[in-house]
Image (cartoon, rainbow, N blue to C red; front, top):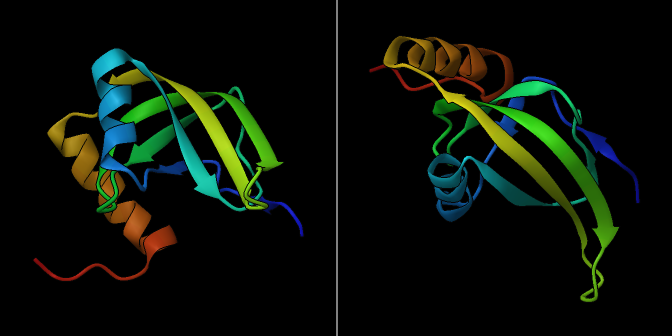
Length: 107
């Protein structure tokens, strides 16, 4: 058991519903498997489940625990700073593939 540190510029959603709630209501949370440390208080780029940059969010809290099913989970609370425009999203998505997600298929 150990904590995994997330990149300071990446907040990747695995659930479309969690991303929708953030974009719709301006506040949201996501649940990740494993014990992770997110940069509370920092602004980061949020990515959709298909690795597309969509918004800038501020991490408000991070709780890592072992739940009642004996699973290691981390809940991350955030607020929406703003959505990215089309050009910003394109550039941030391309950079994330190069730095974090691996090679992107040529379009």
